[in-house]
Amino acid sequence: MKTILVADDEFDMTGLLRAILEGEGYRVTTCTNGRQAIERLTSSRPDLVLMDVMMPVMSGLEVLGRMRQTPGLGGVPVVLMSAVAMRVKREEHGWQAFLSKPFGLEELIALVERLIGPAAPGGGEG
Image 1 (cartoon, rainbow, N blue to C red):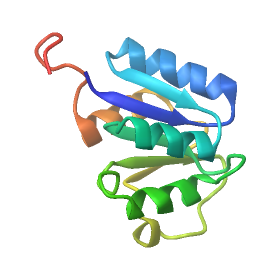
Image 2: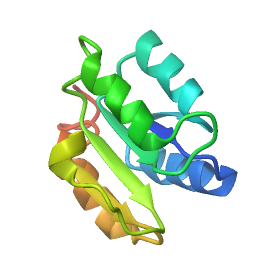
Image 3: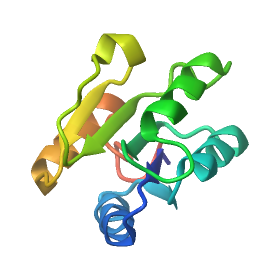
């Protein structure tokens, strides 16, 4: 089963994303700040990270920078999320996609499937 780490300090957002993605068949873990994200990333490598840009302790960009310097995490796809327009370039930080909050359910699912494929192709295998 494919695993997605959702890192966002808004409990409503993490709960909603968990419900949506688990409903699609993905395994979801959540955390509410950048330090927790680093801890989760180093203990269990996810297939994808959905991460808020503005979080306490460490920002999403700081977490992304650490990921890109850590063997085994450098290739994990990252989708940044924010209600604020990004002022830095994707090429400088290496994220795969950006979701502007609020975003639609269909947009989210299509993006996740584009980056890591369906949760369980063939009815639960994979």
